[in-house]
Image 1 (cartoon, rainbow, N blue to C red):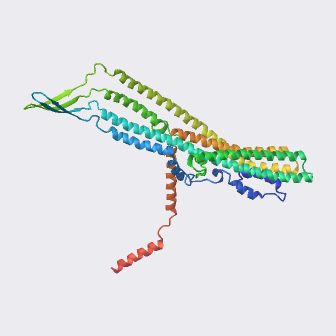
Image 2 (cartoon, rainbow, N blue to C red):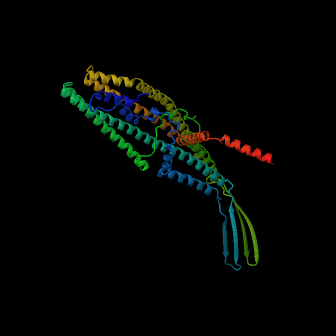
Image 3 (cartoon, rainbow, N blue to C red):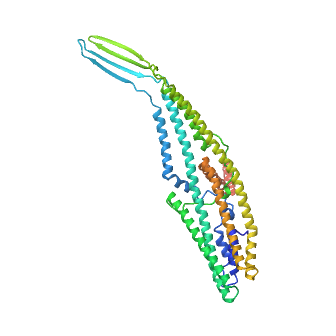
Length: 462
């Protein structure tokens, strides 16, 4: 089995103590160190989302920010229903004149929606609902990206914390051994002080790692109300396949494109709002003993104000919305290019790091430990080499974080994250179902034969 980076480093720390009574078993050190490795380095997980994503989504949907977006989506449906109502209500008029012949009159008037205010308002409400849905999808994707990235950061900080704890324990053990070597004359007082300084440095690194881990826990605590949401690494699932083509249907662009449609519709609404809607009236009048009936028609005359400036403003809004869409499209395109540029390079560096560590790290650690015990290298050089080995693991953690950050930046800002996660859950569920069907035993052949035999016997009896 290939040796891991943690095992490599721990081997370098404990190999020098293997000849003493206080030494730690190399195999136990490797077993404990394997717990700190990324899942991608231990085994290939065919279902990286199965154990944690659905519970996380359930918690995510309970967040107040998410519920507020859901309430806005429900409100949009009410706006559509409100817009699909008549614009004008009928008017009822009653009149009485006291004269030699008393006059009573009743009239009903109804303004006709000649400019189609209702139709334009309905289309606008429907489009506003679509805009709100697009914005909600984008905001949910961004919130989800921040939430999962917080989980990633916590997992990374916990790995580093446990790693620094192992380094600190190894440094303490090494210091005890060094004091024994000082007593036997194998090392000098100056070398003991160097080892003591290394122990102090490890204690400081552990304290900083503890501080960073507390900060990561606090962020999740503020977000979910718990510092231990379910999570599992999925670094091997990060790829470029999610970089969809830039089109108006992309969630990050859909809202801006719909704003252009809204501006065009607003121009039509301005024309409808300033249209001269006629009013038809019916009247019945009784004057003395005489009954009278009448029909009336009134049309606004747009002489003092033809609303040309209002229509011009609405037309200018279309140009503004189009430019905003182009600016948004340009930004998303640049983000996609950055994603295509950064992710492959980071993945290449990450795989090179793993390959170098797995193939050559263990040999280097063994050689350094043996050379130091034999006195071929000085204590200062040995400590410096150990720090370099430790920094190689931390560099790997930094690469992992950069990979996740690059991926989540694109998925969150483009609005594709939630749909991607749901697709992965559905794919894994179908995979489990297919495996279960393949593993389920068929009907026993002997049972089938016995059934068919019984049937033939029954047929022969008949």
